[in-house]
Length: 349
Image (tube, rainbow, N blue to C red; front, side, top):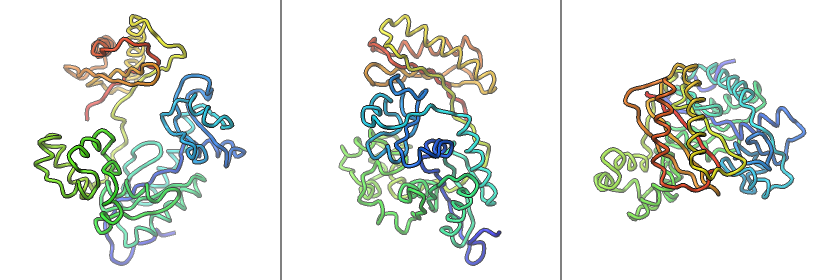
């Protein structure tokens, strides 16, 4: 069966494929009796313990349960929800099947993670191509996906949000301002709440405001690279090159949520050293040296802070990783009770 849109006036498009409620959807496939239920996946599946939500079904999201929310908070909001443990191997297996389907389309596929990828496509009918792609993913895996279509990655990524769930949406330079112009700046991929607040302080509240901003003026506030880049985001400009190089994570981390707060900072130091040792062992197996080590501390009740140290040279040495983690920990001014600790290695490009 041929792929649609392979004849006629062919154009180059970027597609963003995003699997809908991926982890929750995989769990529903494994437990069909949960279809239509409020399903929350996180930690070891026990909402009485500390941990955070990895994902939630759409039925649960309607009540404000989302990724990163404490499991105990989710349980209070949804006392009748089904809580399940994270099963990484199952998700990786299903994800691999999805990516095989995407590659079979003949498109260039750039994997972003378990549940999303960019595709570089040459076709005369990107909507037909996208619908066919979603159909084939559904046949192969019984999972729904949304496909965003754009002239570049920025447009395609944002388009996906307008297509959910299980839809197709095209966002290009032609309809960019019609769709996004009046929306706040944090509607743009790459702009978070802090940057949006800083922009608002300059009188830049919408995407149209940002597109009309003076790049030099923003460079004076955000820096010579970031300022002009923000204006380009506002105008819908972005990278259109899809790279099919094997996906490599930019970092690897170890973290632990403690069921009882740690008030003794010497114990915090010992736990960070332990996590650094576990991380170093993983890095040796991966064969990817760290260039930077970052420590994350989540204080009770739920305030998170991070500090990092750049290594003098890339290293797999456990002693070097641990020393960097200890050094990063020294940068934390707070000595409040701790509920979570994490140590992460960042890799070079």
